[in-house]
Length: 256
Image 1 (cartoon, one colour):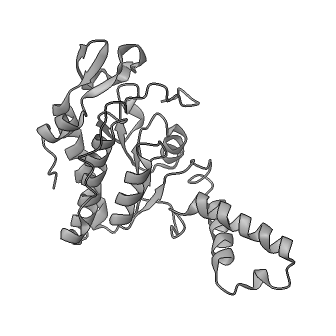
Image 2 (tube, helix red, strand yellow):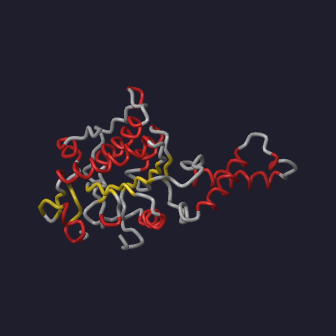
Image 3 (cartoon, rainbow, N blue to C red):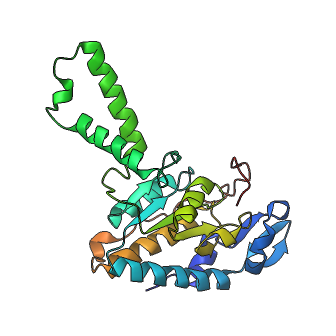
């Protein structure tokens, strides 16, 4: 199931945490050492917790469970969208709309409105002035941007998969409130106790994100009997991660 090896993680810089001043004390069990003012994540723990997460994902996927991938930070957006699409799951890569989970009935109404606006020959455009049509088109574009990754999500997901649990604290809070399991990449500045299946790793590295999220997508595909050469992840090996540890990212809450 888990094809990720220690050297794979090491080569992507998965072991680099944040500067020590930004650490969350609850992350201590995952810290190997401090070096040059930066916490080094214990990759043996990363592999152990990745195995636990993938085991849960595999079992849920075999039961036809549905997953929602969440990654709105710049480094994660393209990867999350590509990998969610690859395993035919849902995703949020733009701003998380408060209530996406906890007020899903309203979200469904908004999606229904979007489907009506996108339907070719929809009656909604009949007998409208040019200005009114322009307003409807603007509404369609806005709703499409907001819901493009969840447009076909008919019910709440069985689990959410998060890149950077600290940044996505609203999604994490909503999922926890509803009892929805959370699989998340957690860095040294994050409280892993809020996460059902934490994966301790550098959540700013594009290559680390690619490695872990593609492994999750592979597990879903394999559980559904759909993993083949046509479903291989996008190669990100030529991407530099030299400046991806962005301590300038500051979420609007420290609840995590």
